[in-house]
Figure (tube, helix red, strand yellow):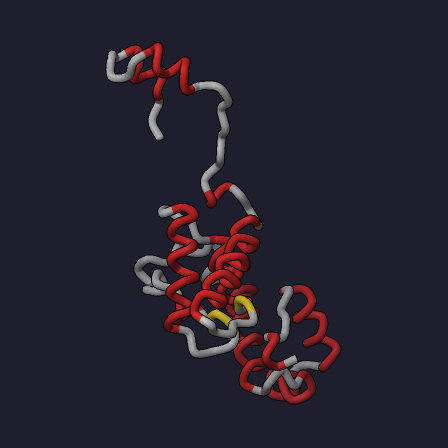
Length: 167
């Protein structure tokens, strides 16, 4: 986990040992540079810890998915593994929720570029109303004072989806 060539130049690492060990070099990018891999790994760890602890979790909530995709993962894959293990231990819902995350403290969450944008506020409000009505689109559209077709379009445009436990 160090620049061995630089250490060889500084005399901090033996050159002959470097050539014995350096058969095949493998570069593994940090988790923050691996895009959607974080979600695949999260699902793997979720299944692993559910089996280990004999618990049932259906998956990640849409809020957790968004958080995972924008979080910088300074602890890399071990931090992800520990976060999922914690979520399985403390989570009470069928889906992993934001409150189950160890880094859910607002001071530690990365800021979104568009956190105050009208689009982001609208998306959050629509999701809140849909969840409160159990994803009854007709009732939600009435509460939001918009046409039902408009609400369907906004759900599609924002990529919102009904939680698995409500399907």
